[in-house]
Length: 427
Ligand SMILES: [Zn+2]
Image (tube, rainbow, N blue to C red; front, side, top):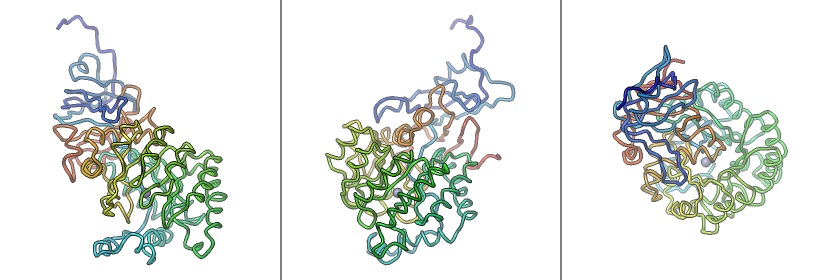
């Protein structure tokens, strides 16, 4: 080693070193995690300015006065998880329904008996803006402590113009939280309770002609989603709603092919949807349609597990066809009461046959891509936003291997340490 090298050329206000590996998630294919052994990372002003080996970091990066140096203590550094499908703004849990389902009642039977989504609608409408905002903030705290730094969050438990807008406003008010929220209007979750008796068409008009224009005009939603399935919306209704959303400048996401095959995935692909989600019943034609459109397939193994689905999404076929596969919690009180990404990675491997590395990329790079945020989030590369988590694990595959609570030692959002040793940092 020559000692003639010049002074460090990079100034950083946060340096994290001593990692067993830095998992950049940069790469082209689903399984390409871009891991750097003995890695280090540095950021300035919320942006990553160095990613590489610890030795390189020592030579090239200097800490600014007042900056912070964090020891990863042989752990793993990963991009903050991006959870691209959640139903975070809801009131009321459904633990009683869980017991009924264990005793043999089906999802559709529970919905037909007035339980299911509509019971959450009643509780959410009753909660109001203040309570909903508080609930969202509490859940974001819990997600942050599990290494999630960005989420997509859907409305959908309001099902009236006012109630849907209130839910989206709760998300807007929660935007002060370190966990970044991408809001989605899901007014078309199921038909609103006041429109059930022969007034479906009126409800579809309400979504297409009132909810979508208002949510778009007030900047309350970036995407529009439709649940296309038995007990929810038909393909024709979905087309009306998605075309309206497109006219109003919203991106498209679709709950598709979960309980029954409806053709919604192909419709979404033909409309240039950003994502198609669930896909337990997807066919090889659907795989080809998504591959051609560049739409991201978001798989939700938490829901498949919780509902004891026997059909599996064709994860391997998607990956082989070059369809980006993202993973999400689908966090909701009825079919996936899980806010943490690591157990979702485990379920994606065990139930859907993904590899740990494919699952990690699904929860970071591909998830960011499904939200149109891949230029800023989802990988650890210089110039990207400094969103990352430090895990007290000896290697990245433990994230998918160890089912349950894992030790996330530090979480960094926009270059700031926002959680450490299982606690949120003071704002
Ligand atoms: Zn969902």
